[in-house]
Amino acid sequence: MPAPVKIRLVQMEVLPGRPVENTEKILNRISEARAAGRTLVVFPEMAIPGYLLGDEWERPAFLRECEACGEDIRVASAGITVMFGNVGVDWPRRNEDGRVRKYNALFIAENGCFLGPEGGPYPFVIKTLMPNYREFDDSRHFFDTRKLAAELGQDPRDLIAPVQTACGRIGAVLCEDAWDQDYAVSPLEILGGKSVDFVVNASCSPFTFNKNNKRNRVFSEAARRLQRPLVYVNNVGIQNNGKTVFTFDGASCIYDGQGNPMATLAPFAEGVMDHALSEALQFEVDHDLRARSLSDVSLFDAILYGTATFMKACGVERVVVGVSGGIDSAVVAALYRHILPADRLLLVNMPSRFNSPTTINLARELAKNLGCGYVEIPIEDSVKLTRAQVDGVDVRWPDGVKRLALADFQLENVQARDRSSRVLAAVAASFGGVFTCNANKSEMTVGYTTLYGDLGGYLANLADLWKGEVYELGRYLNETVFRRDVIPEGSFSVMPSAELSVAQAVDEGKGDPLNYSYHDTLFRSWVEDWNRSTPEEILEWYGEGTLEQHLDYPGCVKDLFPSPKHFIDDLERWWNHYQGLGIAKRIQAPPVLAVKRRAFGFDHRESQMGPRYTRRYKELKKQVIG
Image (cartoon, one colour):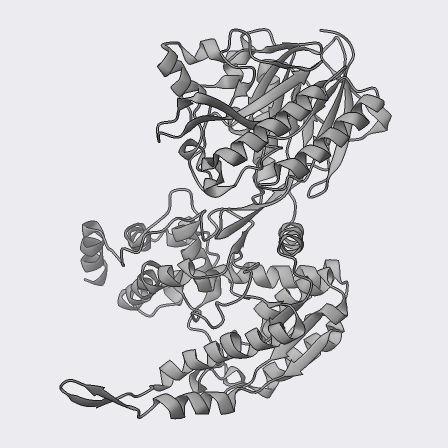
């Protein structure tokens, strides 16, 4: 291997579905790297087309444009080695869906030529491992190495090989190819037995809270096992699958042959990192670039970045937030105030006769602390109008006349819809902006929210946080971000309540029917745990006395319910909502900003099948109640 290999990692914002714009950026970075004397420049996976594109991959015109952009980069590779992700197309062949053959590919351009793996059929590296969990759906669009090997009558090991370049023998892999613990084939192990000089992993890896800790363990162990340096480059930006918006944090990193992280780029920011690889296969840090912290990015950073980037992508410059005095809307307002100047943020309180002076005053105090616009628009008159128009109306049927009646609980939803669909929508239009959805994950799990009411809005940026995490984020905003109490203390201590009836009077200690400290942990086991629980497991653990341990609930569940029957009634109530109308509400909800495992939307795919219970659950129920 020539020494030293002067590597530049480019952590870039990839714009999904914008190959021309991405290519222009790549060409500029290649020119800069060449001028800086770099010999190898590495870009992320799918750096030209973007990654989460839905079925845009089915359009031949889009594929042709991606190919043409790749050709521009090949031409620009004179005197330098360039690695970049793009779609590789084999036009004569077909995928298993009958469409043109496509590969998630890593291209290596050098002196005007594309270089492929030794003995491989294509002038690019093919992604071998196709993730098909969470938000990933790779095999819907792309052929992989194992399928190609079967088609050619070869062993996959024959197709996974180093690429010989002017910078040495590079073991090139794409993202999931390094996360191989649960696969029958390990591309890294195969490459490790074929005399590679170093490994490059080009990724397009979405942010998930605490994921970086695992990623560093995986890559450190891989570099140590292979005894070769490993280069990891990831992109930043946001991409989406329609219902779910994912952030990409970058956090590109280089590891030496002992698995030690040498340096990493800052999360959620474009940047470049230069290193030199010596003959001894050890990295020498250029320009005294010291290793940054490898600890995980905070949820605040991810939510702030995702919200601001989504706003930019949608052309949103003004935001309206319906503020109730409670913690959810207060946190949303504070987040947007950190993004927007005061004159582009408008807070709206919409009281009815059920709203307490306590919460109204908290909304006023929040607006004063944030220094933004504030208005109170009562809804009592419009709710009365709706009731007068509907309640008592005679409907003519073939068999006679029947009268409509609005019950009090139905008027609760009328109020919620009046606030969002009527007032907030009109105010946002007048203000020249959009209005927000302030729902949290606890509410969305069981549908404790109103369709076309508080579930309305252009983005639900807190909907991947449990209620307890919203409180934690509020404290973080006060203590760390603003360094003063912009969110009033009363918003933390007031009873969580929709304030839609006398049964939800906060000044009387009445509010939501959820014990969030317990229900957050229960719902999390249904939604986020890798082996997701059902009432069967919950009831089994309850009977064994181990439920608190399995849920990581700090209290005692039996203190919350006077009898096993009360516990079961609560369990079934919320399970029925989660698997029932809650699904219909989530399907119609705004896009959710994903920051943790199993965000609602494409990351948590659901079918409207109605609530179901196993036979074993029914047997356990008899035993527990008996």
